[in-house]
Every structure is written in structure tokens, then in C-alpha cells.
Image (cartoon, rainbow, N blue to C red; front, side):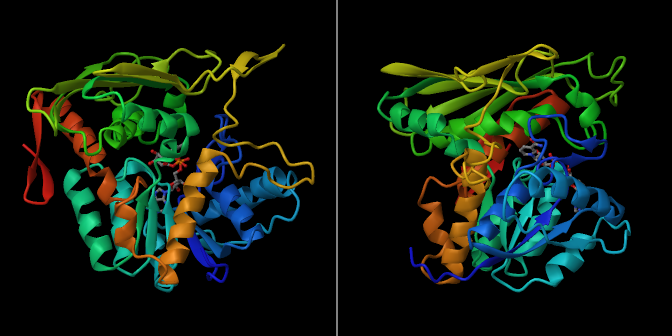
Length: 420
Ligand SMILES: NC(=O)c1ccc[n+]([C@@H]2O[C@H](COP(=O)([O-])OP(=O)(O)OC[C@H]3O[C@@H](n4cnc5c(N)ncnc54)[C@H](O)[C@@H]3O)[C@@H](O)[C@H]2O)c1
């Protein structure tokens, strides 16, 4: 890669837990107390890849507290961090559409990184793409398969990259497992479990059960990993969903009546190389897991092929810390490493949360310099919008299956994936 690539201007959409570590109820108590996106971009600016930064939320009145939080937790922790950024809405106003003003101020070739509630991903992403802006959108990319297909078409038309921030593809264990699965023959069975403690129902109170569900929120991770492993090997054909209920809707959480606790999707997969080989996948996600289990996200999965199997426990990696007041906890510095380097600088550049954002920044700069084209990224294992369509197909089918109490088919019509 040449060294004279132009620096990228980047707008962060959403100013919450993932972007800044600051949530409506104060500093996040999860494993992302300092956030991921802001910290990574401030560090990439220090390293010369990024230039001007902006942040857009809904309530401009939050920015003084956010700036104070960043000055304390990032400025106070790492050397040489320039924490300046432009804010929207300005002057403390409240405006859920101020992303439009912020994007209108950007030039084509700039980039937007979207970490906002699931139902807002599509309107913000399409608005940016149609103005020639590169997009990195968090998972689930969209809630509807039709919207996902629109983003594929729009990013092609406007010749920009649109990636989905599926950071688990950059976890060294997961990417190694994908390579090993390739030599295990036909796919037979996949099972994934991911959960967060029920205290998250307080954190997610604003949207839990109303705007999105726990399958979109957590199973999106392992559905994407399974689709990635099976890319070119098998395709999903049918989804049946089942949900456990009663905890989220009871005291003390009192979520809206339609909120599920634990959602399971049962998916049929058809081999692309053998008509007689079919596989089954079970993806379960819960936000009513026990408190104080020592991990923020429990997460493990199992893959069985014709010639062998793979077991991954991503929550326990042989590293635990016990403190008198809090008991035992399993940390994951392979995702985000917050401890500084020997020189006092941020030191987490190898964490897969950081790598995921850096790969997007590198791709956008490379496309801007005409070294690569957006289409070239679809031919890689990167989570481009085109490469992630089956993840959205399965999640959307799962939601329909729960709502309509029926099996939902997935099939290709011409070049487009559809549900039936
Ligand atoms: N927090 C995590 O660990 C994590 C990890 C991976 C992905 N995600 C994804 O990130 C998204 C949510 O981000 P979060 O976890 O930081 O949540 P959050 O609730 O802490 O923050 C959401 C932010 O979005 C902003 N927002 C809402 N509507 C908006 C609009 N119309 N325009 C601009 N901003 C708007 C809110 O003001 C808030 O700052 C979800 O899609 C989730 O699946 C979160």
C-alpha cells in the first residue's frame, strides 16, 4: 500500500456505549467503559490515517458530559490524543435527524461509522451512501432483508464501500477456525450460544423488545460467523424460531409485553456441492443470563463437519482475575486492550475491535486513492454489505417466524436473496 494516501474525515453516528462508553445513565458499566469507535479513531488520527472527526447523536445537550468523560478516560489515560470533534445537533438542541445536516457537510469520499439503535441503521446508511460517503454500519446491518438488498444496490451505484462491523471475523481464533473448517468436509451441525446478564435489560430499556430483539442484538454475531464459514459451501433454506419469555416482562425489569428473554433460531442448510448433504444450525441468544457469572458476554459455539469438529469458548480464554469485592472475572484483551504501552500511548492496535475499524478506514482511503475498487472487497472475506446478506436473511426470517408462528423459507431469485 502506498504511503501517500489522503487522511480520511470520519463522522461517528451515535454517541453511546460503543462510540464513547457514555450511556444515558452515565459511564457504561459493561466491558466497554471507554467505548471502542471514538478511542480507535482518536488513535488512528495520532497515527496519521484520520483527520477531522465528527459525532452526531439525538440530544446535543449530552456533549459537555461526553467531552468530559473522554478527556478523563482517554485524554487522562493515553499520551498525545487529540480529542477534538465537531458535534451535531449543535447548541444543545434535540434532533433525531441531525445526521442529515452532519452528512450534508461532508465531501464524497469521507466516511460514516454508524452505532445507533438497530431500526435507524438503514435510513442513516442509505442517506450517506447516496451522497458518496463510505459507510461502516454495526450489526445487525438492517432488520429487513429488503433494506439490506437496497444498501447493496446503492453502494454499487454510488461506488462506495459499505462494510458491516462484524468484528468477530477479525478474532484470531474465529478466523483460524474458519480456515480449519474448510478442511472438515461437508457441513453437518453448528450450535452457538451467546448471552448477557439480565442487568442489560436496564441498560437497553429504551429499545429492548420494542425496537429490536436479542436475536438481532447477539445472535447476529455467530450467525455471521457461521455464514462466513459456510460461504461457498452451503446456503440456508429454512428458518424456524422459538422464544422463551416471562423474565424480561416481570419485576424488576417490566419490559414491554412482546419482549422475549431467549430466542433460538433453527436453520436448515443445503450443501452446494452435494444434493444429499444437509446441515442444521441452532443459534441461541439471551439477555436474561445470570448476574455475576464473571463474563459480560457468554459466548461459545460448536461446528461439526463430515471429518471433524471445532469447539470455541470465547468467554473463557485462560485469563481470569479475582478481586475481593467483585469475585472472579474473565477479561478479553484480545478484543480491546485498554492498558497503555510502555511509552504511555494507547496500545490496543492488535485488538480485533480496533482492527475491524482500521480495515474499513484503510479500504476507504485506498478506494479514494483509486488503488482499489469497492467491488474488489466483495471478493475477499471482509464483511462487506454484499458478503453479509445471508446473515440478515436469517435474522429477518427468524423475526417473521416468531411473529407469524411459521417456518420461513430463504431462496435466491435471480441475483437477489428473498424470504418466503
Ligand atoms: N454496545 C455494544 O457492545 C455493541 C457492540 C456491537 C454492536 N453494537 C450495536 O450498536 C448499536 C447501538 O450502539 P450502542 O451500543 O453504542 O448503544 P447506545 O444506546 O449506548 O447508543 C446509541 C446512540 O445512538 C444515538 N442515536 C439514536 N438515534 C439516532 C439518530 N437518529 N441519529 C443519530 N444518533 C442516534 C443515541 O443518541 C445514542 O447516542 C446497536 O445496533 C448495537 O447492536 C453495540
